[in-house]
Amino acid sequence: MDFELKEEQRQVADALRRWIERDYTFEDRKRIVHSPSGTSPEAWKTLVELGMTALPVPEAQGGFGGTAADLFGVMQELGRGLVVEPYFATVLGARFLTLAGGQEALLERVAAGELKLACALGEAQSRHDLADIAAKATGPADAAAVSGVKTVVEHGGQADVFIVSARSHGGQRERDGISLLLVEADTSGLAIRDGRTIDGRRAAAITFDHAPATPLGMPGAGWPILEAAADYGTALLCAEAVGAMDALFAVTLDYLKTRKQFGVPIGNFQALQHRMADMFIHLEQARSMAMLAAAKVDSPDDGERRRVVSAAKARVGEAARFVGQQAVQLHGGMGVTDELPASHWFKRLTAIGLTLGDVDHHVRRFTEQPGFRTA
Image (cartoon, rainbow, N blue to C red; front, top):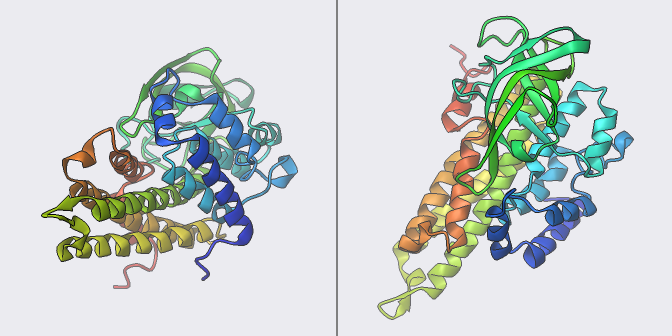
């Protein structure tokens, strides 16, 4: 397959990169991270003006109907620029709305940048198993409510509407009986505790206490949508990780060319050149797998989608750990200080590795797919 971005995709990514380099510098980002909300209204407005919120929304709802492959370059640039705005959370939420159908009005608001979404999927006991749900969905469609606690809801404190997974019936880890619901952030029965995560982003713990909700899709039959949307989000995270690794590799190479020891740049030492070569190999393998995941995540073959996405997340996760650790070591003690961008890319890569399933989770999921074991 072709691993090059199309001309239109490259133009969109280039426009985003130019804005980040000009108006979303590392110093700008630090100020945003330490602001009360941890996000920037001005930055969000620019993302909207650049068409980023419209890109993944179907054309019928005022968007551009972009695929995950179209978003690859965008996510790569967001990773390279360490952008902390609630873009990924909103795009993932929009995917839920698109897959469920019947949410045209909300999708139009997403495309226009008027609506920020957050996905309340994880719970304290669930680890990486999205089917491990203790939250309860009760009541008929016209009077539904949700109760339970959702943890590490990315940009939950900045969202206008939540997509919530809850259980209508069945056992706690069963896939049957899972419902998806829409809950407005300003409704009753909600307690939101917002905070900053290790990578400078915002996440919230949200308690739902009989919060009024609107069913998203068929009650009790939400697992296929939940799994497909999570795979879509995973593919986007792989693309973001590639952008972060790209940038981390570049600053590390530049550091080796300028840092001197014994009167010569340390990049002249063959042992360090070998380590940079290993980092490059990991990066390029991760890039290829991430692009494959972006191309295949929309596949009508659910089995192929699961295999490719899990293989990509596992390979990207391994590469991110290797590239991040090597970069920190090659920078010396400075590699873990807040003053250098290197530590922030490393933290973001670590967070991505734990989002929507870590390496072990996706290796296990890959091996559980039909046809992996022939004996």
